[in-house]
Length: 116
Image 1 (cartoon, rainbow, N blue to C red):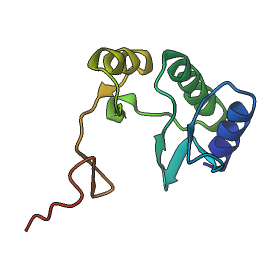
Image 2: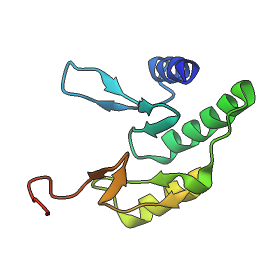
Image 3: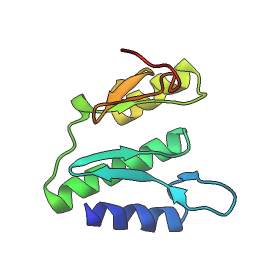
């Protein structure tokens, strides 16, 4: 997974992948890792999706770790349904909807609402 982080840093630094900036002078977020689980984040466009697909293919070729796209999902924030479907098609994975659970935590729900 350190190799994947290195790849993401390099492609971001040369402008091939556009992550999400955390504030004006903060870091640029491209992915989050937990054990063998990865969440990729970035600008929601076809170019980014194509680069990500190529990265995953190269990562598989050098590491032998294949990404199971049947278990992968695309989520879009403030993006139209047509664009979400387009990127899910480019990445060859499923289209997800909010809220969803990740590592046992609900993502995208009303965080102020308590349920018993």
